[in-house]
Length: 133
Image 1 (cartoon, rainbow, N blue to C red):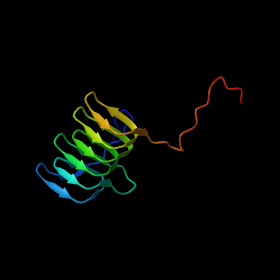
Image 2 (cartoon, one colour):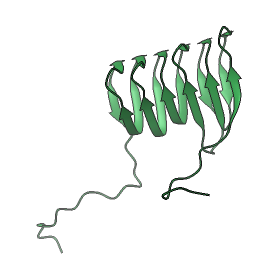
Image 3 (cartoon, one colour):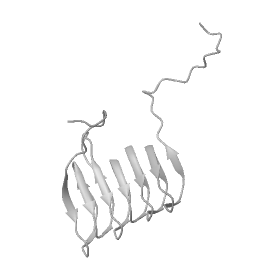
Image 4 (spheres, helix red, strand yellow):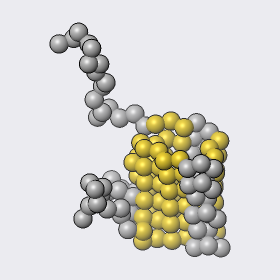
């Protein structure tokens, strides 16, 4: 079921709990929530939609990649979101950020380059006043 044309987000089936420390890269499908600390890359696998939630007290020191990324905690490394990136008020990102759509709340900090993804599937902008017919 969709609400107002939006697709339902994938389910969050995995959790790095509060107080848990992971040393090494994490690969996941569908959804992952991080409440603890990860020292390594956190990457969504597969062609399907994915969601990654990094909560207020969470820390990730490594590369982050998923279709929908929600950051409330700290990420030290590049962030890549192919659909939607949400930076909540307490978000701290040290690294370059690539995104399709960005929602950045007041208070969120990014120490790096914010750069939108460029899609070859998007039509080129054509000016209405153009004489090319």
